[in-house]
View (cartoon, rainbow over the protein chains, first blue to last red):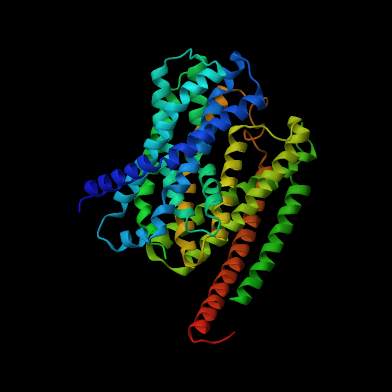
Length: 224
Length: 229
């Protein structure tokens, strides 16, 4: 079995299950909607203020929402000992990891696409800088969160306090990515700063951590 | 092993005493900051020791994933725990110094923030160790240790850029350029003393970890043989 075929099969299976149940996307959508509403009560910003704080609001909302989906990634594979079956099969472990990470990436990107208009409406956002840069930042940033999140979710399901463990180990490691996403988003929205450095940093972060995840996933999958 | 540790205790205490003497008596009083600057002789050596311990943790974690030896895992947990203690010392002594000198307890400047994030990463490592189940603990925490260490340079770059874009209320750290030679002596002696203290703590913690493993293995053996206790 080649890496590609295993990745594709697992990814398609996850997408089909998500398409039928819509568990992850629905809970993420409702969760981030709640965050948007609660933040607007908490800060009550004017249009000018919201442009300054929107970068933080958007990414904190997406980070929290992503954790909701990430926590469910591996849970259903545990139920019928699917992970154990996978372990004894000759399929390469990094193929499974890539499929899960890509699946989560798609879910979170869809969530962001659906939530973006809502942010624009609720916070009266209007970008001064070019919008395509926001798309680049969003794609790179989402991968940064999701690649580590998928890996740490595989670790946290093996701990005693599963659901709480994931944010505890994911957030500290994600701080540089989050700083990059928030600061570049604010820079683009206000048109005051160029996001070039942040895009490069996110690229480095993505490449480095994708490599580390692929290298270490086999050990974590087979941890006894 | 035990007598070695006692000799080491003696050396460490002597060095700590000498370091204290160097810091409080020999080193000259700083012109503008006064005596409060002397906390520097504890602050900086603690930081160096903490970074050294985190590096040891990183190496031990790689060795564990490679060789799967219980010893390297014990070194990893010992160095991480002692490293967090020294990092806490850094984060506590920093504000004590900053309050009279800068007028504020804390500023989100690059070095402070990086140290704080470093502390957060290794605390999360210890939390994971506490909640991971049974024999998976070693592998999971070794993986997280590698993630944490790889993250540190990226954190530093990110925060430095973040701070240069938004100037902080306090610019620069103050010291760093042109230390008096006697001040250097105090720093280096204290660093030696702190490194010895760290090494001692790691050794003791390592022994404790190995003993715990032996006891656990004995319990498991007993349970296998159907023993009631």
